Length: 345
Length: 134
Ligand SMILES: [Zn+2]
Image (cartoon, rainbow over all chains, first blue to last red; front, side, top):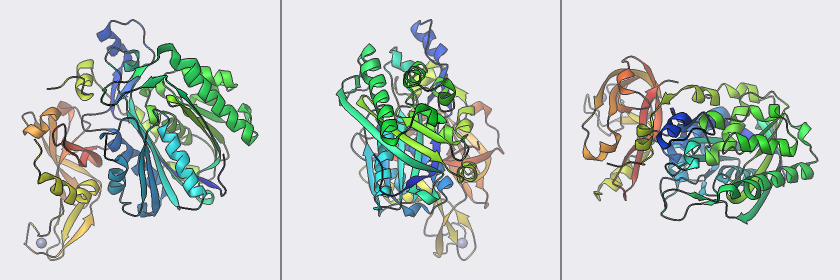
């Protein structure tokens, strides 16, 4: 799957809230002796997927160094929008100053919506229909108290502005998507917490879709694992991305720069996109990056990018992912429960 | 309960609140936030819209522990006077802080956050707050 004209990322930005809860603290409350990751991010009381998307997008606009009104599309991918009916994209666009001549839409496909938003914007720019487009992945994920998901369900956002190839800090080389109807994880209308199919979330869901999307992209583009300097997978925990890397023939070294789930948790629609932002924070010009998302229900998008000479000068124009990871306020379970609306007045 | 007239107000003020748009008096030069049509110093009606600088210093703050009912769920929270880089003083919430570890004089930057919800069924209001500079 390729565009007819060369396009690329002209600006990127990420956001992770300042609050953290340690897995050990969650385990203490539920009497568990093992836990999957070190700690996860927690959104503050005045944050939601919309405000996080705004900050990531603001950072992306700063790196793009373009007048915001030249952005002609805003696509927001999330499974945790603040409204059931009323788009986040319009508020984000209004706050960034890019309304009203604008294509704007919210998208939902579990943890995959962000990369599909990016792919859609790549298509709009690649067809020549628009000059610049903004794609965001953002989520404030919720796990049922005491459920295994509660150890990892976290919050974060990442945003990418797509434009012409010659202005790009990373060119889009190819994309590939693989989707099937697979009921591995879902949330019914009006339900506060999602349900999942236990072990069913592994092989037929996460592993199958990521492997097929990665192999599909490499086969269509004539690439092999050793052609990539970095690879970023959707990261619901630490185990899955490392295991799928091995299955596909990637080394731990290729994965590590973009693997953040151990210290920020699973940021759902933002997970692989924050991973990509962290790789762009480090990569040198001329390096190739593979990103493969996964969203339940189920599907994966694979995107191959090659960085350019512009990357290093753009990088310092907005905060690095690392700077968000390093600012931390730890909360206990009671404060976490209040922040996440698990207890109400 | 949702007051019907608060929806048009939120809609009218959205760009001012979202983008930190202040007013600057063409007569006496005073700049202020939020934007309004009459100068609070000299009463002039010649006011231009200005995008205020997003960075400044926290001059004073207070911790709100008994807030108005719309803000109850956010208590305790911090309200402060921020002096922006151009000298404009802004009354705003200070966020991402531990109340008893905050110091006056710290550098702050504008962030876009949730102000309040008009009840569980009403609209959600967004706008600028400040946090210690990262
Ligand atoms: Zn005046």
